[in-house]
Image 1 (cartoon, helix red, strand yellow):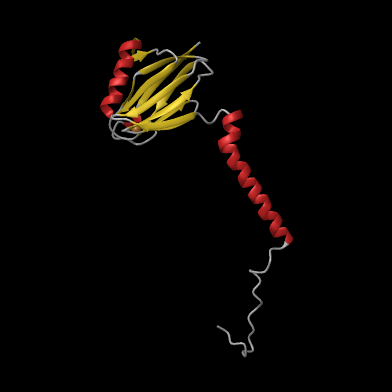
Image 2 (image 1 turned 60 degrees about the vertical axis):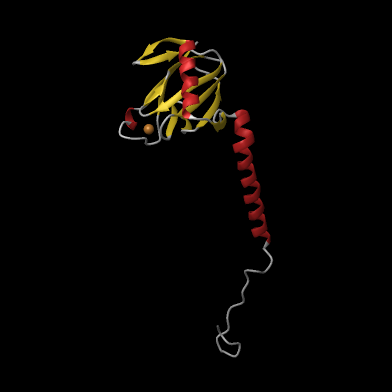
Length: 180
Ligand SMILES: [Cu+2]
């Protein structure tokens, strides 16, 4: 603290003086741009982009979900793929279970049809990454992640787990085949 009587006089403090015109202008630019980016995330890209898939989640328990997966396999299995059931479900609800260290079942979907992919885990947290489209979702025990998707292009898609889940994590892959 410098005394008024000192020969050293503190410089005038300016920071609480009214904003200058250029400062006000920059604040407005930043505010408008922040709001624009906020709208892009929730309004613009979901409407015109391909990035955001509609997604919701709800609670479940492992036994209930596993029963639904088994029922879906029993009803719509069309073959086997790499030792796992290959299921071709009709448009609507599609069940996919993540467990150490696989995704069950392998799926065959039709291009242009709309499905609700229901994901859950029977043990620990997994990640669901659909390649090469780079769709990413969490797969959690006790919760169902529901993703509405309409495949637009046929081909073979690979699911990889992208949450470290144990010693076999790097082997944890699944398949979605999209047929015309
Ligand atoms: Cu993993």
